[in-house]
Image 1 (tube, helix red, strand yellow):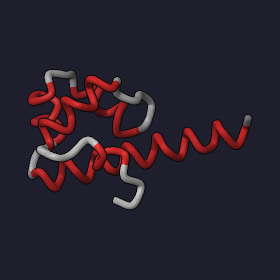
Image 2 (cartoon, rainbow, N blue to C red):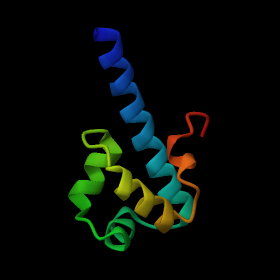
Image 3 (cartoon, rainbow, N blue to C red):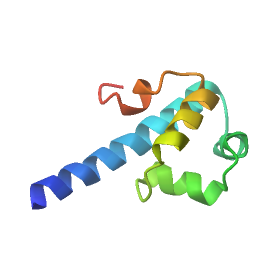
Length: 78
C-alpha cells in the first residue's frame, strides 16, 4: 500500500510539473491561465503542487485552454 501511495504522490508532482510547463509553452502566466479556466489562482496552485488533481471534466477544460490533446496532460514522457 505504501508503494502505491508513493506512486500517486510522484504522479501528482509530475502532473503539476507538466501543467506548469504547458502553461509556459502556451505563453500564459498562471494568473491568465486561471482566469481563462474560470478558477481562482489558488486552485491552480494546488493543481501545480499536486495537492489537488482536477476532475475529468476540468481536465477537458484545461486541455481546451492549452489547445492540446488531453493525453498530453497524462504523458509521463513530456
